[in-house]
Length: 141
Picture 1 (tube, one colour):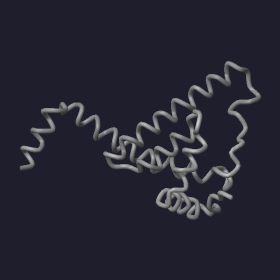
Picture 2 (cartoon, rainbow, N blue to C red):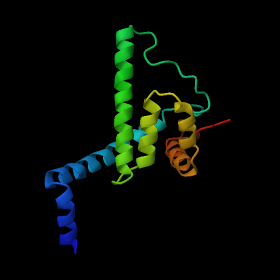
Picture 3 (tube, rainbow, N blue to C red):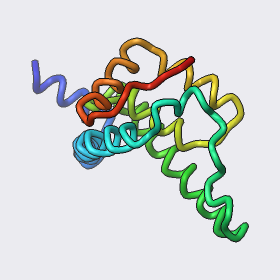
Picture 4 (cartoon, rainbow, N blue to C red):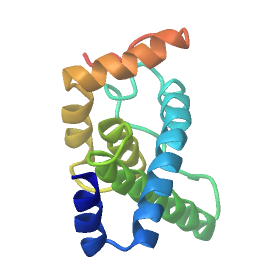
């Protein structure tokens, strides 16, 4: 039965692609285990309440600012896509998607952040990270 399943998978995905997906999954899983808590514990407790953040590289040359924004958005897109993949592969899909959204600039971002962060499961997981690091939980009002 397992051999039939493997043959079915190999008819859709090559062995190289399958190995690549496994390697990506392991690297993404380990990477998010490190990156997500590190970033979420550094955010101030009122990050989602006080959404008037200073712009990235505000006091730098416009070219440096645009390059910084480009890199920040590309990193956000990578995290977002990795999070979507982790919905089907091992990993912290929702938290990784949230992290990606925090990096990306787009209209309606604040509403989407609020909806995601206030989901009970996500909020509980994030505040557990923060508690272990000795940080206060996020506030919303």
